[in-house]
Image 1 (cartoon, one colour):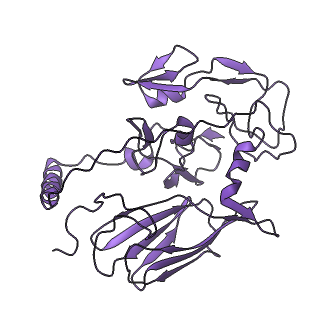
Image 2 (cartoon, rainbow, N blue to C red):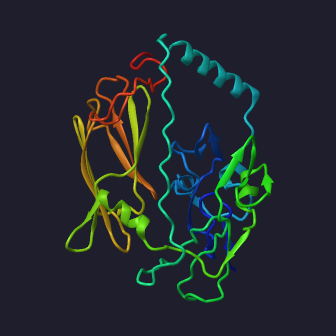
Image 3 (cartoon, one colour):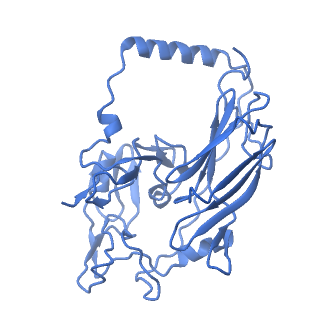
Length: 328
């Protein structure tokens, strides 16, 4: 029997309980205009961008309110909490004093491109594609095709988050929990769903890619992020459906050479050489391909802190590593 997964970021209707589920195990975080998930680092400014943040965890589908990892997690003892607090206090005390950074103004979100009200009939709609209108959440089923009696119930307004309450500008209902907000019934009915629109949003990203003669899309950039320990830099390059058998990752003393093809119907490929901020030990560095990203562990050659991942990135002045590298 078909069931709907309740994991945040998934919401897929499934019949195979062993099917891989990609989702966010943490709650949403909204702070000073920024939006993201507690379980991963990406932060965006608009709600539409927030809904597009790729899930960060793989597991199994669930029909309960909490993912299995959280449901099975035993409460930590007071001794464990006390020990963790002691370690954090020692780490913070080891940070050298420095002058406070000058606060930077928050970036202004660019206006969203105008949305089409109809799907372009010349474009193919992928099976399982979810309606783009807010609050609808209906998925396209290729086997059923389109119908003139679809009735898309959605919210034409923008989401509003104010002093803990959540709702839409187009209607008056307000709730406190994010899960309740995602279930607020639409207040406007359109005759048909909007799965892909005119395709203009997709074409607008063509400046960052090109297409080869065999139909493969070459990507110039992908989103990346990193964190570090005293000995290792852990970096993520976000690209879905990387072909594990064909992907190659080469570690050089101060560069990372990537060739990442995907298994999409229209295959993509991200091929580049990443200049690294510091020197690494190629023999001790490793990588693994996950469902939504490539994760590499770069073993530092000298144990120094990296303020940025790439040597061609602008330095921000932030200290990203707690404690002093190389000290025991």
